Length: 436
Image (cartoon, rainbow, N blue to C red; front, side, top):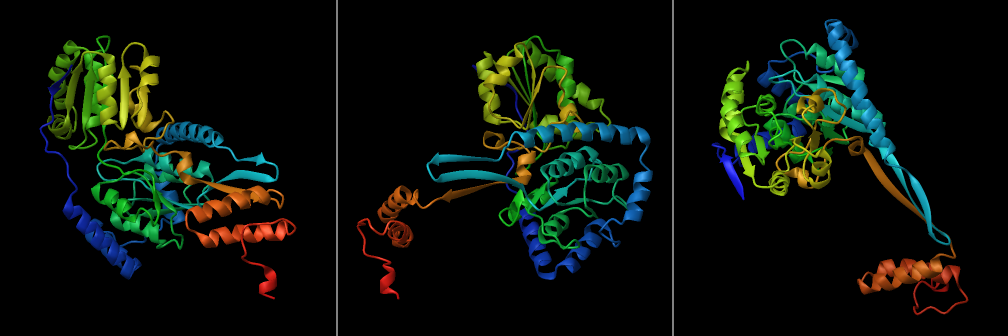
């Protein structure tokens, strides 16, 4: 039996019609008026009237402001993310096989030509997010990478600038919001339309990506950050509470969940959470997230814990329980998995190497997060020699007529007649003599 020990107080989230209408209107205006519309929204929403493309001189000035320790830490995180992305890339191989005599089938693996990487810059300066998107695109081999981030005052954040530059951005835009997403999709200010746009953002950014999907590729449909912990009676309640509170600081609508097989642990965490949250510098944010969206489930068995966790498909899932290999083997739906007390979600968010741009709102049931393969295309090819056509054209011709597609059938019929003129075929079409 599963007990819902702590329930959320917030109402179920629905599509914000106001957000949708606002984004649709802005995108239509930018489509119509181009860069002039972007300048209008940048001044109206951000008070920005300067250049959008970060110049080499200004970039150098911003990077000069970054302390050496910060640079070293960003370099550390970059090295980890790059190494993992390289391993991911190596796991996807080109190949060619001969399925029958004269029939060669294969695949090529090519990167997209232009990627747009959105780096949020509202409540926090997301230097790690710049690495996650830009460095991964660079490893994939994307030839032109545009990165953007909202300006704070008279520039984007210096540490974010350093991270974008280190990771390999070709152009950096001092711009955020819907107009930044639209600019990358439409190739404004750069002359290069993005083939894919990646990176987290607020509700307006997420909606812009959703609406533009199809015109461009996107990484994931993103909502507020989610984190869950599965814990048994071996877990330390304080560690669980600290980790849940650490993730709740993403925003007042960021859910944090505990699925536990220990009633005592569940009760202890429920008692600790308000105290731990109150001690945070941003206590109002953490308390609101816990009050409105925090949940605790107490399960009789670890199988029940797996069942409820797979139903929620959390963006981040941490396991603080015995027999970690069992959990890894049985859990199926999540964005990224953190095994053991030593593996806090903060490691993945900042520097461990796996990507922190992950699916939310149960999308982990059918999608993983951002990875090097998102920037790559698997392109197939085939080559059939004349002899192979004897079987393949005959089969394709018959199947085409089963489907009622006479034109497809005749393309095969013609090859049979051309390559095997001395054989009898059950059709009377495309005899070349009739066209001479």
